[in-house]
Amino acid sequence: MKRTVFVIGAAAFALAACDETTQSGAGGPFINPLPDRIVSLADPRQDLNAVKVDPEDGCLVYRHTGPVETTFLPLRTRDGRPICTSVEAQEPAPAT
Image 1 (spheres, one colour):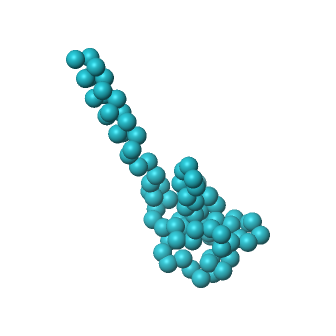
Image 2: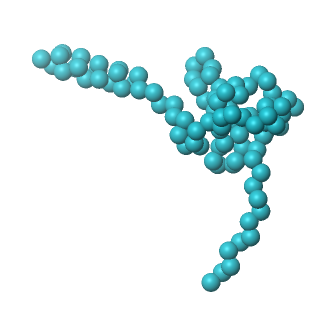
Image 3: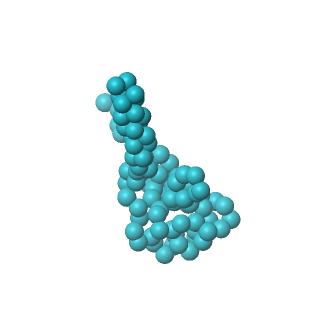
């Protein structure tokens, strides 16, 4: 009986590891279609089919699928500079 409970518990634990943990979520959906200006700036060795804006810094990131994991890396130009969105200067709110 103990062995059956152990096997069922181990199977449930193993199947839980199969859940997909990669989410497109935090930064929102991918930019589709990618503007021509960004395509012309970006290094062609990057996956331009899965690009989104990183909400932390406003820079573009692309999905890199490696042999071990899939992660998001900064989208860079041919000379290695990151491609970021421009943020308009905002005036501070008046103190009340």
